[in-house]
Length: 186
Image 1 (cartoon, rainbow, N blue to C red):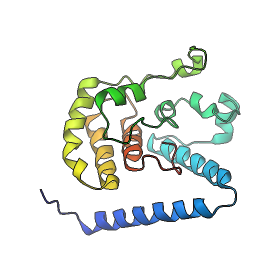
Image 2: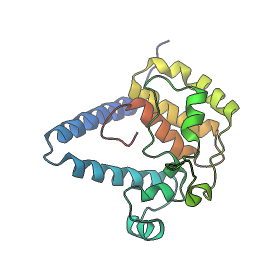
Image 3: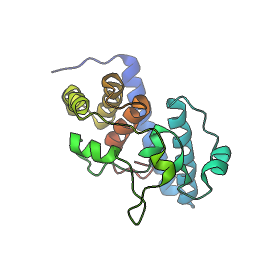
Image 4: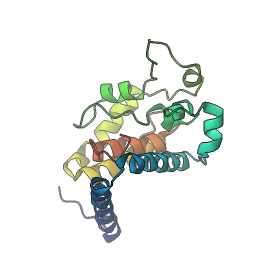
């Protein structure tokens, strides 16, 4: 099956591939890569907050939820429930894998953080995730970057979560298309 893409999609794809390669090169040449990674994480958090329709003010959030390096895990946004939690496999995701990824996270010692449990649950619907997987299967033959974009758009359309479908869809697509990349929290 041959797909015809518009020039704008091909240009965006080329620009994205170039930006990823440039970022990887910059990371390799950076004298203090941990500073670059910290800035990238903050930029990622701000972008995900924008997708969720919120303005991320790190200083205000730090005052409310703590200054620890992992204080963002307590933020009241859908993306904070899975940010920094990579999908366990580089292969095409399965329903079981996605359900495990979307579940709440226990703290060391097996207790759940009150701030995390008081957040609105994502409440994933396994049947809708199955439908989503069937809808994106044909795109699996495309490049990882294009497949990731298709996965994100399709996730938002199928809406397998109670809320946060756009931002979580982008995260699923990003984690598939850039799996194993050091420059992303996925």
